Amino acid sequence: MTQVQPAQIQTALQSLDHWEQIGIEERAALLRTSIQSLKDRPQHMAEWQISNALTHVGEAVILPGPTGEKNELSTQGRGVFLCTSHLKDDDSEHETALIAQVYAALIAGNTVISAGDFGEQITMLLAPTLPEGVIQSVDEITEDLIIDSPLIAGVAVLTSTDKATSLYHRLAKKDGLLCQLVEETDLVNLPTIANPNYILRFITERTVSINTTAIGGNATLLELGIMEE
Image (cartoon, rainbow, N blue to C red; front, side):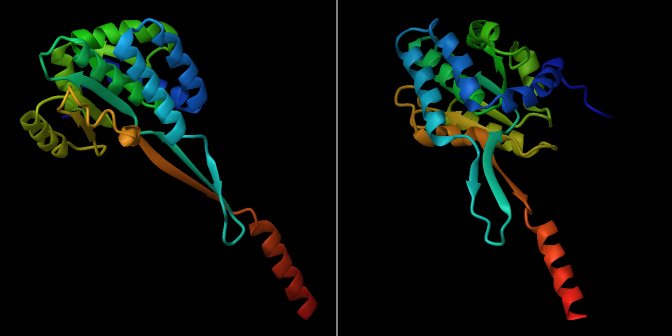
């Protein structure tokens, strides 16, 4: 029997293409509009995630084509991310970490479903400045259904080491997309979130190769064949 998927996943999937296609520069501009409502460390963390993404995840790059083809390397978001916390801390460090994972997921081109009280607050902060459906919030019961959904691309979570291991096993047993787990277990030092490579956990690379010489090349070969006859 087909599992009924939470409505928030369908909404996030419908918004994904548009959010990705507007490009990282426009995503950055929209996200920076919301930063003004943040203060102190959360504000600095949100800005750092955006600036770091602009450095590490740029626009498409044209690569040399050894046989004359056009090769274009670009990055894109993985899909729908659940951003949540399984810790009970209610302080500025907790808020900073949650802000970091949401902004990183969004700037990379993913749509986000956030959970918990902080998740609802972050959604209320961002939703007015972002396209509809790019960020949504859910309660804990719906969060559990979303974790088990084969349609989500990743889970960014603040959690303990033991719970992270359990979640790894849970995600590995799912059907569908290979679901990325991006966990942070140290809210004081933030070794994962504060790493410049953190943004790379939310993207995938895409290469498009266009054969720009096929028509001309074939025509030249035909002409040579005619001349030989």
